[in-house]
Length: 413
View 1 (cartoon, rainbow, N blue to C red):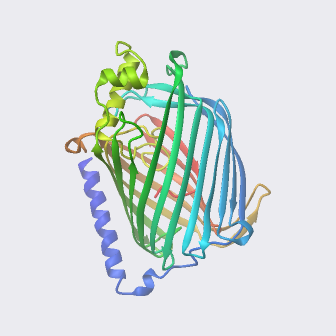
View 2 (cartoon, helix red, strand yellow):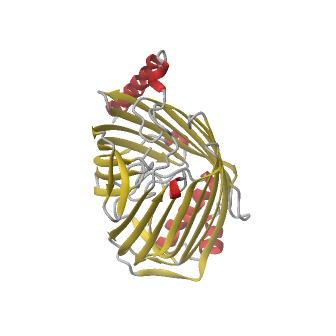
View 3 (cartoon, rainbow, N blue to C red):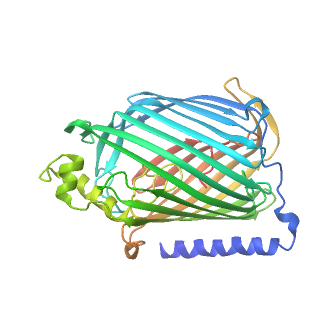
C-alpha cells in the first residue's frame, strides 16, 4: 500500500509539472469547445436491480438534455418493486445567461431497505450489517451557481431539507429484529457553500490541467440531542495527456467533520430517548454506538458506491475524517462527432472511452487514526460522451469482497 501511495504522489507531481510547463503556452489551456451545451438529447432506460436482502425491481430512468435547445437538463427516476419512490431534478436553469444558474433536486421514497453496517470506520466485514426499513424519505435541494470565464471559476451555495421515517429493523435475511412503534422520525436541514477552480481544457472531458473544488456543508442541530457540525470537502484533480486524445486522471479527496457543539453522548439517553430500545439488545447496542459517535465526532463524506471505492456498497465506510485517492487511465478510442437516434436514446456522440482505474481510501473518527486501515478497488469502464453534456458511464469494480457494477451519467470526479 505504501508503494501505491508513493506512485500516486508521483503522478500528482507529474500532473502539476505538466500544467506548469503548459502554462508557458496559453493555448494549451484554452477550452476545446463551448462549455455550455445546447444539443438536445433524451434517454429512457429501464434498469433492473436485484440486491440480496434489499430486494429487486426496476428503476425507470428518463433523461432530457438541453430542453428546447436551452442549457436546462431534467431527469426522473421512477423506482418500482421492493423499493418505491421518485427522484427528479432540473439542472442548469440559467437565470442570467452563462452566469447565474439554478439547480433543483427532489427525492420522495415511499418504501426502501438500506444496509446499515454495525460500526463506523474501516473494520467491518461483508455481512456485518442490519437492514433499516424506511417508509418515507423526503429530500429537497436547491443550489445557485455563479459562473465566470467559461466555467473556470464558480461559486455555489445551496440548501437542503431531509426527513426520514424508520418503522423497523431487519436481519440480513429480511426477518424483523424489532419494530418501532411509533416509527423513528428524523428531520434535518443543511446549507452549503463552495467554489471550483477549473484550469483544464474542457469541463466535461478534461485531458490536461488541474481542477480544485472545496465545499463547506453545515448541519446545525435539530434538537438539543443533536450535534452542531460542518463538513469540509476538498477534491483536487490533475490530468496528464497521453498521446493526442487520451489522458491519465488523478484525484485526491479529503472530507473532515468539525463539531462546533456535541450532541448527547450518553448511551442510555440515546437508546431510551432516540432509538427507544434496550442496550441489552445487541442490535440496539450497535445502533446506539453509531448514534453516539455521530453526536460526538460528526460524519464526513462516506466511502463506497458509484464514485469512491466502487466495489463496496453505497456509504459503506463512515467516519469523521475521510481520505481517498484514485488514478484512472482514460483511453479515447473514438473521437468522431456522430449523431444517433435509437428511439429511446438520442444524442450526438463526441467520444467513446475505455477506462482503467485504481482507487484507495480510509476513514476514521479520530484524525490520528486516519490511515491505519485502507481499502482498495480497481476496475474497468466504458464511457460514451455526448454533445448534450452527459457522460454515459458503465463501470465494473473489483475488490476483496467481490465485483460491483455501476451505471450512471457522469464521471466519478
